[in-house]
Length: 322
Image 1 (cartoon, rainbow, N blue to C red):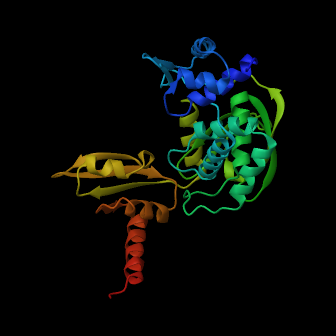
Image 2: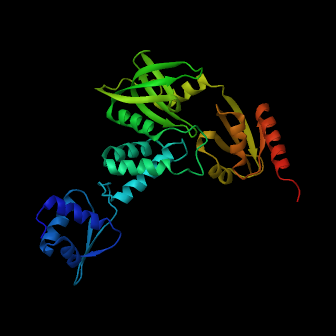
Image 3: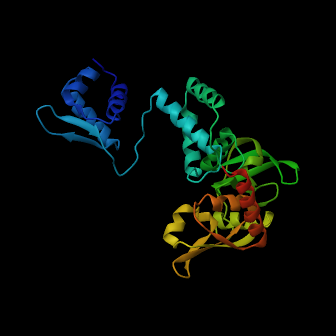
């Protein structure tokens, strides 16, 4: 008979997280306790926020259902490794849908992984190569998790930084936010050495580590973190405006485009126009427009028009007549 109540509750929770209904008698046998004890344990789980649903009947049963809040989950070794590997693979690139929340989840998971599982995750990732990735540079997941932990814990962060001109420096910062722009990760932080806000490209960050010193949040830059990041990126990159026309209506075009590219409005007889500003190379934008699978015409700038024309010619030559 199981007399260790905490251990029994964890075992019961692990069983209930399997997507099925458990008869009271079966739970009683699995746990080695009476059905009355099972009912008391179910009530304890409910008090802890786990939405356990009971069904009536001769046998009676219990199952875990969706609730209003997200209570802690129990993962076995294989599940923990699978989730960590998946988050690491996605975090290595600034891809759409993999944002700061994913990196925070990875940081929390790796913080509590036993050494044996952490080794399995590292070994598995080192032995595999993804067939797809983001458009931006790869980033070590360890770097992202270190930054995310410092952001969440409001902990001062030291790291080495390589600027765009190749210059190297050491920075002591108060990190506020990790932001994915779709092709790159950026860290927005207050630089204590420069006594001002700075934006750091995460792929240029090396050897980050938390100092253990906590900080009180400062007043954010005008407009907030996101507005500051946009201003900072445009200040350090040569941006350009572009206009692209599609023969199809906005509702057909919008789902095929990342929101960050710009705004799509109706135009002419059932067509639409995309207007936006980009700091990415025109080659990247040309390819991204081609991936929509839609017919389109570039109206401006001239550099993008030329790039699309040359890309189309190269692709035509790459597919000779049969």
